[in-house]
Image 1 (tube, rainbow, N blue to C red):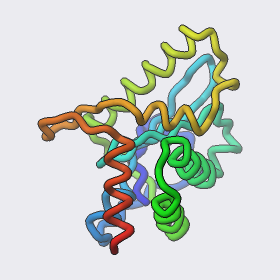
Image 2 (image 1 turned 90 degrees about the vertical axis):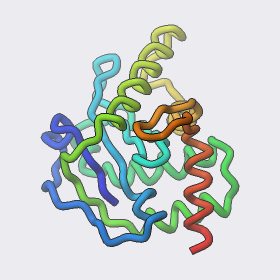
Image 3 (image 1 turned 180 degrees about the vertical axis):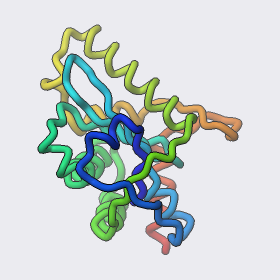
Length: 179
């Protein structure tokens, strides 16, 4: 699992920077490449992770320093449960859980501006939604928020049409199911 972190997040993580894994099959490589950023919303430190290929988002609110030590468990929990909230079928959720269970996390600071732009737009939408609904960050529905952030069209550099993250993640998990 390759997590491409911003320098701001990498400085807070208790892990060493390590080279990305490159020897995976093409569908697994697409599932295992994510970008992560440390953001502040309502004076709370949060982490947003976005899959490079599908732009599927995982939002981890109110992450304290001790919780950052367990970011892998938080990611796994929110990702799998947000797939349920997004309406994916159970066999596909099992495929995602199986692949994540086997994954080893590697962290680096190699970033794509295209994926970072998607994270920025998602962060702005979330911040605006909280403000508009007079809602506090600690009161959000954790899994539903990640599914909501992923239910939008996203532009990807080099791709003519917009992609829909939930649909793209479904197609990716279907291709992994057939391996």
